[in-house]
Image 1 (tube, protein in one colour):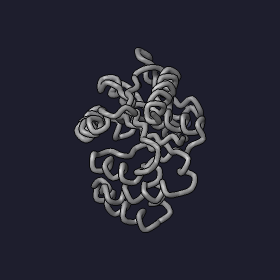
Image 2 (image 1 turned 135 degrees about the vertical axis):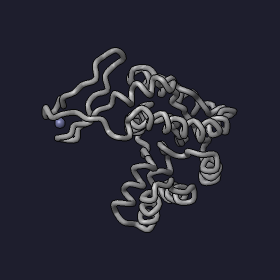
Image 3 (image 1 turned 90 degrees about the horizontal axis):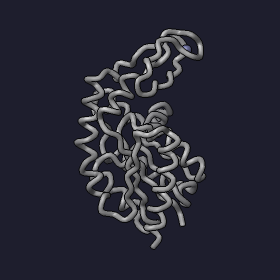
Length: 221
Ligand SMILES: [Zn+2]
C-alpha cells in the first residue's frame, strides 16, 4: 500500500511548502525536479551539465532529460514504498512517460492545488526578498501593506525581477497552456482531486490530507 503522489499547482500556489510538509508527515521522499536539476547542475553531473547548457540559452530542459532524472530517482530504494513528485510532470508527454515508469506500482494519486490567477498575481507581486541577508519576507495577507524592511536583519526589502506583474502574467499564461491538457489527462481518474489553494496554508494542508486519503482509498479499490 504505497502512496505514489503527484502534486500539480501554478507558481505561487504554495505547492512546494505543502508538498514538503506532507511528505515529511507521511515519511515519503519529496522529489522536486527543480531542486534535483539545481543539485545536478551544482554537482556537475552529466545530466547537470546538459541541463545547465540548455538553461543558459534560456530554453526549457527537454522532456527526455527530466524524464531520465525522474526515472533514476524513482528507482532508488527510498521511493519503493511511496513518493511525492513536485514539479513533474509538467506536460502530457511527461505524464505518459511517468505512467510507464510507475507501471506495476499502486495507482498514482494526483492532486491539483488550484488558485485563481488574480489571487496568484496579488501574492507573487507582494513577495519581497532582503537585499542584505537574502531572507524572504512573509507575504502579506489580503489588504495588508507590503513590507519594506527585513524582519530578520532590518535590511531593505526588494522585489525579484521575475516577480514583476508582467513577468508573472506570462509565467501563468505558459503554466495554463501546458497544464490544462495535463489536468484533462488526469481528471477522469478516480484518484484525481482538486484542492482549493486560495485558503490559509493550514486549511490547504487539512484539505490536502483529506483529498489524498480519499483518492488513495479510491485507487486501492
Ligand atoms: Zn535581512
